[in-house]
Length: 506
Image 1 (cartoon, rainbow, N blue to C red):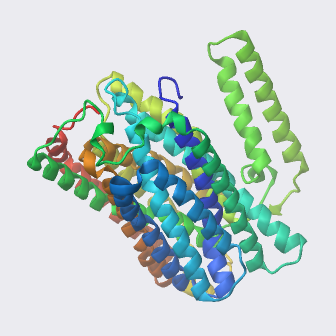
Image 2: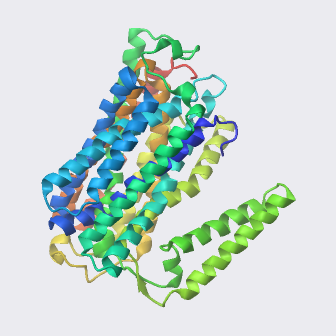
Image 3: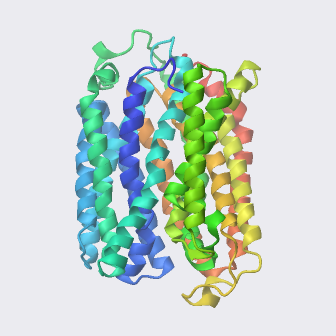
């Protein structure tokens, strides 16, 4: 997967993995924590959730500006990591004052603003050389995979800390969630150590946009008209993808509430395997071991792969036989499926795009975004069908529904969202890196984050509809919204191609 890539991409992969472990450990339980600690309704928690998610993705605009003009990208990432760790540490303190919550979330927002967009810029800068430029799309998929390796383990860490402090040590549930936030700090420490220790592998890509002596030799000077064309093209894409993020971020809000209130959480041994960390690791070992065992390669590699596959199968059997006939699972564990699918399917999506490229049929980055939006509509359709016979939120009055659906409805939705995300999110970051004027790279990656921010703020609209409408109506609304956004992007493809056709290969 890393063949032909500069070593700096491995550093960025690992740094993003640790940071995202911290983030998703928090987000797996954030909505539940708001309701448990502050006794807020779904709508009230949704307002706080959406405001936080908006600000945290707006801050990279400020962070990008500071990196472009003053700090440089590497220093911004390092400072941001330290600040985020402080914010998660504050979240671990059991306090009931809303101002203290606001302080902790504010610190996390500042740290994320310095970290998030600027690490993405470093990834793009690693591929400035003409001989590496063709690998940039693949690089952002690899970077995205690192994000989701960290995210995969996060819900299990959150659950383990909650169970330890609440179930075994006797603390109240809200304090159990506070303990889970403390686990987030570990991810940030890992990220910081890796990033600082391996600086030599990305130092050549770490410069301020205003520092011309470090600018790539092949960098093309743009005319004012070309700069305007590119900025307009980027702003149009940013506007369209707001819809995707508004829908996708429901995984931490409406879909989390659906998992808790409308999903049958008592599962048998086979289904339980997919919600058990060791069971999933066994499945991963079985599949990956079998894959490499049947591929062409050295006898030693194939033998080792066969051993891994057999070990995975043994682990599956041990875990499955140890489960009772029916046992309850935690609703936050559904959060693990999106990153799990990302890790599994990123190589497949990369292979699919490489196949299309060899045939001369690979879609452009905006084309992939259009397909991602269409697939998002399909995910909403799955939830609309699952919700057809379920009572409304108002009807169940804060209790669990008497009618429950199979957990596989949510798993299928997360799978479909994952495919959409792989078509859209890394392609969007790559598009920004290729098209934006060189002196505005940090700022424009911040602009991409701003589109996420606006979508995140609009998540509260969906949570409000979720409380007031029938469930199927809410999800059908999302289907229509995503389909319209896909159509709008498709209609703009030719215009975007003209506006960005002068972009150099780098």
